[in-house]
Image 1: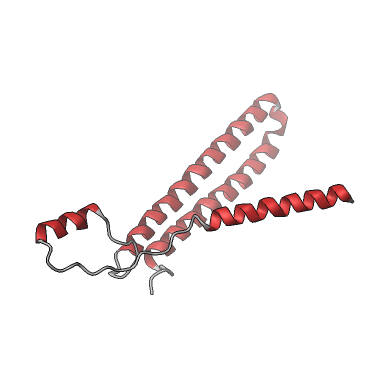
Image 2 (image 1 turned 90 degrees about the vertical axis):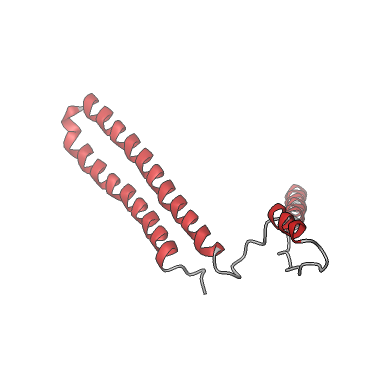
Length: 140
């Protein structure tokens, strides 16, 4: 009983320390600052180039641009994962058929079913990419 309470206390202490550490990692969104009067135009231009503006969608550019990047990652990672999985499954099937040719029909059926499931994951990635590109829920 004492051991269980000590472990529970240690887990709660570690969890609260982790929560406090993670909560300090978030930064508040920067506020808009008006340009100070009296500075030359060249200095303001240099300051604007040196310090990038906030990455939010006041002008409507950032969310579609980042959605296109997200769509690229979605379809790319889905295709890579599916391709690697299909290659491994096909290789193992060929190894199994070469070791036991009498079960080739059973292995082929299981292989085709598993390849269809793997390809469906790629299609899910494509659907997510198309939603991000054409029916973006992040845009008002």
